[in-house]
Length: 153
Image 1: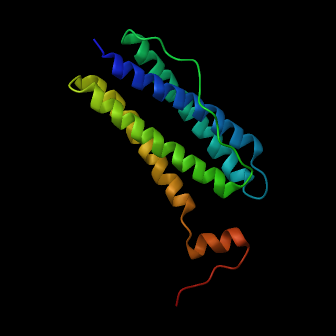
Image 2: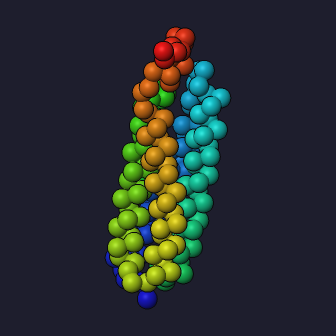
Image 3: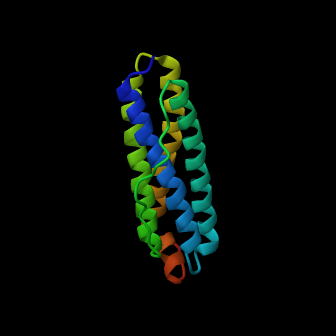
């Protein structure tokens, strides 16, 4: 039987995932400009990933004897692409933290730990991806600013 602390943590994760569905969907709706074609699809894909995680976690809470929450946290939104990317990186980092805490509470239930680790892996990949998207390199700076890329000699 799962502890109350574990079910509470899973419900906090579920609220976070519901927030991701809304926050990433909103970002896909309002992103404008030359980068819309690239990022609207990325944000929509991330909303779908959050929904998939919400489904998995909600089902697990129910299987463990808990009642899944149907609420979310407040979303962060902006029309500034860099801000949205920062919000997204921070959102994914918070998910990594939350899943890590749940794993600690799930020990020694190995199958539950593996279930959570599988999702944790995807969340860490999200942190890595947004970190790379935010990294300023000469090539990305040139592409975003309209300046010609410089060849290294």
